Image (cartoon, rainbow, N blue to C red; front, side):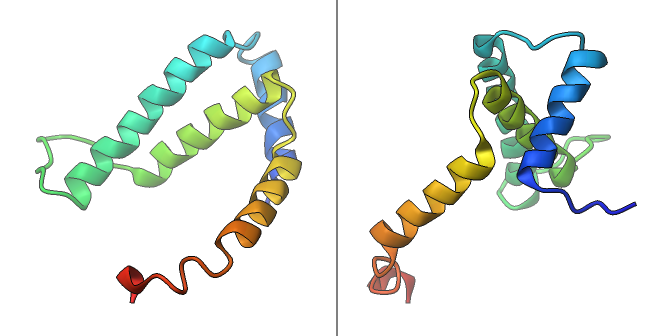
Length: 111
């Protein structure tokens, strides 16, 4: 099975799963709370693995899984608010290229 999927395919997959297995979308506000929770779990892994905190005994630290959880909720929020993330990401990249095209390369803090 080919695991390479587009953003649009991911949005469709999440939508189909939510409408069948998940029954329905949570409210947008609930999904925002879920997104915050998932980002917190990414922060926990980062603090333990790359920061100064030590792991708790028996703690499962799976950064890939936690990042995928964040992506899932972002895709769900985009779906329920009518946002095409393929289009939004392309626009965002264009904005960054125009706004930041020379900003970072000329930043002496990054050298």
